[in-house]
Length: 205
Image 1 (cartoon, helix red, strand yellow):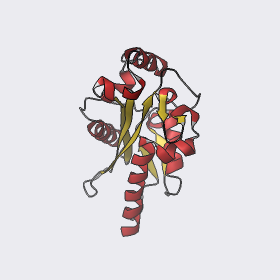
Image 2 (cartoon, rainbow, N blue to C red):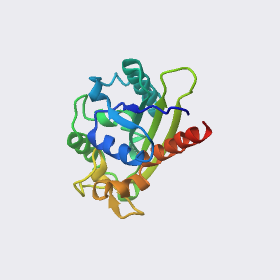
Image 3 (spheres, rainbow, N blue to C red):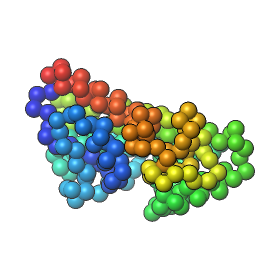
């Protein structure tokens, strides 16, 4: 793409997510700025899937700023809970729930579930939407499988990271550095796939 945009809006208010994505996109000649810099708040997430919500948030940011926008929607799907909390992961314990409250509710609901049935997956869908009709949205997805522990371990990360255990890495998401997490996580996988599409677009044009 000629004249790749100097600035892209990241449709999130999550500081941790902004740091992760800026690291992943460090080689791309653009500045990724949080939507808060433009006084934008996220729209209501009415989608039934992670991808629907990602596209909804990105398109809203484009409408509000006139700039390209990246948005992701991600969440935790627990096998024993038939996929919950799913698209409501950030609001599991209520509309204004904190990470701690969401984790507390999850652990309570899984209290009687045996160790071998505590499998779960983090899912992430990401979309880059441009403010024109020439370029179709770029979309990608990622999955990170693990197990839900009975108590928190680690002090890093955010969301459900303290109770999400990666068996291959022998760590929770909260015990990993951002570099380690980006290498294996659902968000790292989705954004890496998106980054490949952006690089291909740059080379093509």
